[in-house]
Structures are given as structure tokens and as C-alpha cells.
Amino acid sequence: MVSPGAIFWEVDVQADFMLPGGKLYVSGAERLVENINALVEAARRGQVFLISSADAHNEDDSELKQWPPHCLKGTAGAALLPEATAAPHLVIPNRKDFVLPERLEVFRQVTLEKNTLDVFDNPNTDRILDRLRPGSTPAFRANPLFVVFGVATEYCVRCTAEGLLNRGRSIAIVKDAIRAIEEDKGREIIARLCKRGARLITTQDALMLVRKAE
Image 1 (cartoon, helix red, strand yellow):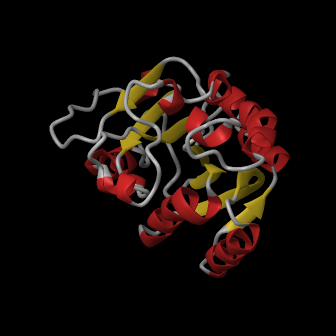
Image 2 (cartoon, one colour; image 1 turned 60 degrees about the vertical axis):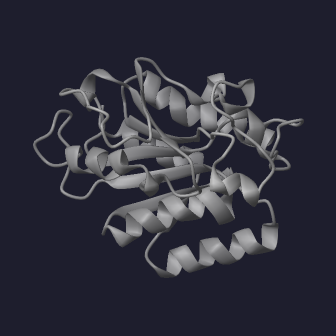
């Protein structure tokens, strides 16, 4: 049974960020893989609905003027790690004309592609959130808890968390399944998010949330 009170939100668990040798490797990110796999396993088992974000860059994206080329569409570096995926899996491009399927519940995971730091720049992100409402199938509570994890804390994790908070959503951040590029800055970001109402939880806490729905 899919948890009505929690939705997992995975941020950019892609080879170029997560693995040594990746184009924009976050140092130590590979140490998160065990916990991320445990979280995603809950989606594979049908215990929780999983939303993911993923960079899907074109060579002329403005972000690549600030950062080295990374997660270019069609490259191995853009791929989500196997430990970060569940099936059936729907990939949602950053296009206004994309037609969402009528029944999202047939998927265990949906991945929102993005060309900037902020997944909410994909027009389909808010459309997905609108679908996840009371009475939908699976039926969610009025304000389910969005459980956020991935990389990097001070960039895309921050944008995801802030975007959800700005939309009045409740969030929890999985402290043992995130990683910052700069640890001090990462701690500052987490403190700021907590002041706005975010909760800090562990991987085991997150798994307990969805096991209660069984």
C-alpha cells in the first residue's frame, strides 16, 4: 500500500554528481548510495510514491556557463544510479507540451528533467504536485510530508526544499542521505530550512513513516 502521508523526493542522484570521476562529482556522495537504495527500495515495494529530479542538459544551457559541462542528455553521466531507480518509471521532460498520463499511480517513480538548478523551472513539476492531492489515486492526505534527499545540499536540494516550502508543503530532509559541496555552507542551508519549518530525519525515520501505511 502506498503511504498516503509521505512522498519521497530524490534530487539528482546521477553518475556525474555521485561517483568519483563524474563531471561534477560531489566529494563523498558515493557514501550515500546505501541509504538512497534503502529509500528507493520502499518505492520498488510499492510503499511510497517517488519523485526524482535529474539534470538533462543541452550544450547551450545557460547553467553550463557557470559550471563545467555535466549531465548532458544521452550521456552516461546523466543517468540515475541503478540504486536510485524503481520501475515502472516515467521520465517527464522539461517541455510545456508534454502530456501527463491520466494515471500516475501505475508508476513507482516519476523523474522530472531540468535544465537549471531548480526543478520548478520544469512546468510539469507544479502539474505533478497538483495531481498529488486528496482523492487522487493513490489517495494522499491534504498535506503529505515530502521527504527530500540527494545532492547537492546547497544547490539543487535547497531549491527543491525551498520550492516545496514556498508552495505551503511540509518537508523533511534526510540528513544521512544528502551531501554538500561545502560542508559549512550546507549546514547553513539546513539551518535556514529548519527555521522555515523543515524537519531533519534519518533514513530509518523515513522508512518507518512509510511502513506505517502497510
